[in-house]
Image (cartoon, rainbow, N blue to C red; front, side, top):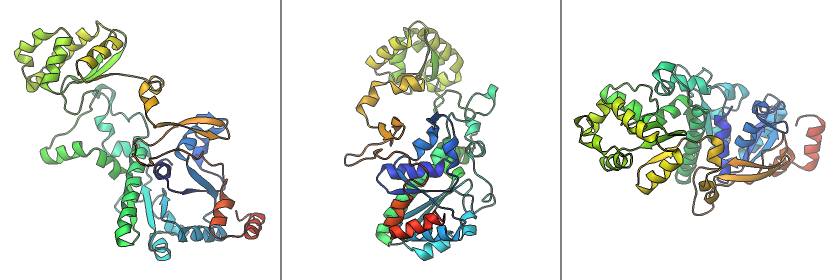
Length: 378
């Protein structure tokens, strides 16, 4: 439900003309809360910058319209379980025969091939089976999912990169190709360090708690007088500066903290010393002190607090678009280009909003469109 739309959103933000095909019943995510005047906010986010049409791909007349769109398309994106497109008669072989330059981006739980190919792929299942949950959270609490649809988003982003790569390859070969994205593969790609370390050394990564991936004690979460902060102190010079600002310089001469091996071995004792000092000041005070002394640190902020950061006033990631419900703020692309970067310009479509417009561009006359509408083919 999310990885395919997220992929299309990424491409649309960068200027692709993305036509979202919905069934007559509409995308189920339209009904996902929270709502903005009856419209699901998740749908509004994932489907901005796209044009929307309604087709029943199980109806012969609508399939003909689909094929006409395929003739002029660069990419078809689909997020079905493997085999669904073939049952509809629009699988990869048929698409490639019709338009050899076409790229098909297919996102599924376990890919188009393999022993699990027919299984459904859902974010929480993939988070569990990919190992992501096994390294998240605290041992006392058991495996923990990440706090967002991580597998969906990683898969959608991976698919967008794969489609863009296939488009670039086509400029050299002139040929289209299938981009097969398994959600579990996409998440594995993001966990490359954990998987590679295990395969190379046999290391089994435990739940990370709030430690950095280096497991260094001063890459962790600490209480302050009024909240929480994280430190990302990873080098000896940084460690020296930290202990000085915490007024804990005496610890620098202790054998148990002489180097990183010793500090890791005495993690609990070092954490108590650092946190004991940090509890003496507020997070705001420590933020100012650490910034002045080049000590990597950050306050733990809620989403409402993060939105208010001055940072966003100087960047383009937070964007406003006009919709039928009035102006709404959305998150744009997570990167900037010097020339004509990603932007959010089109609000999410109402069901079938652009059907007539898209059909006219595909070569249908106004009379033909009116006839199909009268016959309830569209």
